Amino acid sequence: MNETTTAEPLTPRRLFPVALMTLGGLVLALGFPNDLLPGALGDRPYPLVAWFALLPLCWGIQALPDKSARWGVWLFSLVFALIHLYWVHLFGILPWLLLALAVSVFPLLAYLFSRWMPWGTTGQVIGFALAFAGLEWLRGLGAFGFPWGEVGMSQVEGSLSCIAAIGGLPLLTVLMLLVVGAVVLRLRDAGAKRLLRVTAALLFACFLAGWWQTYLALSRQARAGENRALTITLVQPSVLRGLTAEDLERPRTLADWQLEQQRRLAILTPLSQSSTLTEADRPRLIVWPESAVPLPPYPPYNREMQTLAWETNSYLLVGAPGYTLPRNAAYLLGPTGAVEDEYDKVHLVPFGEYVPFVRSLIDRFYSIRRTDVVPGDGYRLLRVDGNPLGVGICFESTFSGIARVYGKQGARHLIYLTNDAWFHRTAAVRQHFNQARFRAIETGLPVARCASTGISGFIAPDGRVVQELPVYTRGALTHRVYDGVPGTVYTAWGWLVGPLCLLATIIMLLRGVLTRRKEATETSDGGGA
Image (spheres, helix red, strand yellow):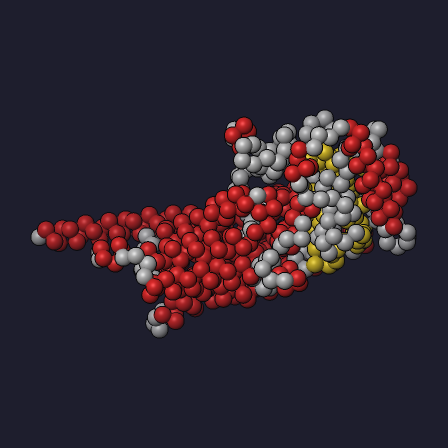
């Protein structure tokens, strides 16, 4: 080993390729909804941009010395995370920086693992793609899981998004890195053709399988017909705000909450009634967003909601706090106005809905709430006229596993209630909305998303946006949605792609370590002879 090479500092000659990789992280962030580009330009994803952004990353891990490549990979991922997660600064500069640093560790680990892979540069390309996708999947697990900014998410408006119906976002991510890595390898080595051919064929095969799966999902929905349809109204009041220091510190009395309840009902009720004016479009289910009202729909706070359900002969799904415990709940009122069922949010937001670890220590640096929200008992379906609905609240739409559970239980629709007023007008609003689009593709189910300030909308089983209300637009959307039929490949077994990538990484890593030890032993024995 050349000690001078490994100890040599980053010279201007080596800073340029590292800077090029860093620029790739910036370009990748521009492929997602972001806060850098103005207006409508920053509100949409650009699928092709993400592919080009991966070129300097894959080139750097193949061409640069280890130290330079490490810096390049880390800066690539850090710059991407800082831009993509810029909205976190609304909750403080320190949480934004810490979260970006935490997210940037995973691609760096993937690179470090890839350096130990067998089969030379080809093995490194394969190993990096597998490790990247596997660690990205791992990042979204558990109570502190954060499945945000996955590389495959950049393809939400591209033709390749249908691949998620086969293997979810991990399959999209690993295919993108494999293909780009194989292209770079082919450009660097004219004889390296086999990997490019194999990866291109694999991408094409997965695209055909995903297209066929989404076609089946749309066909099954179309065959459901009028007898298997549900007319839904989404009400977007645009009255809630993000948290401020004043909101956090000001004490609230019951009288304060009652006044706030009346203020919100004065907006929500007329919007809901306006959707029932024509008999042809009369909804069977009216949906209000997360935390739509500050008091639960039980006596003596439910009179207006009870009257609305009875007069419109509709079910009413209302986001409100728990009745007996501090929960984040969705209540289903029947046409009589009585609460027929409820769903309590299970996957809570750390530091947002509860404070983990030692509260006294955390509160010194970061404070959101004085009382922790209690999680629900589990995921279960709510039913409107026997029609099974999978309901998720806010952050739960980012977890594909929750939607898959509802699909396995037989849900015909996915309904998401959210309060995105926290995000104001940042790119997080569209980023969060696009998560729901992938839940539709993965499960093959139609999605209805109701947000307090936007974006509310209806999403087809192929991820296509049927209708939407822009941010801070007060109004109601009504749409007749044919039942979806769960049963995609992803729902059945495609969710295993993430753990299989991680398992393959471990196997290749062990193989590489054993091979190097064997070579070192043979060299040592040969030298001793």
